[in-house]
Length: 114
Length: 112
Image (cartoon, rainbow over all chains, first blue to last red; front, side, top):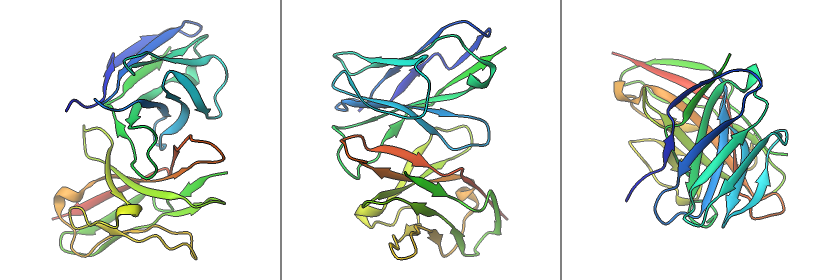
């Protein structure tokens, strides 16, 4: 059973640029969520995808967008990067939103915006 | 709205001492509560979920709906328990979106 894999592991971008982060969900999981973890904070929910449709979104502006593909892998896109977007971005997968199951997390992508 | 509060940013105990990491939550419905742990240089991983009422690595946590708490306890701490611990709440807020709301975490250090 493979876990959740994310790429790249580290990334440095310039303010105003666009970035795409990628995630492969754990085998058998069709729900993918993205979280932003700023330094010293707990992860914050960005959005969730279930069967290629967004089915929940946190308090993030529209320049944060995503996709889920038929194989349940996912992308997080951020446009017009700001310095405050510097954070660890975590992807998490879950089977079918089963209540109480919890999520399996990837190791994250460390994004630095300069 | 969902909210999770972990009042202690840092907690330091000696090996063999009891440990309790506090977690309080705010949620109008029936929540699912979890504890996640992150060891040094490792990914966030699920430690406990209240629905299964299990004990993992000697840790237990009981959901107290009256006090809206889900404290994590272990009677005898080990050095390998040193890690960052996050309490998280999952609620379905009117949909099938069981997003996780995390606390800010407690860094536990177990001294020899």
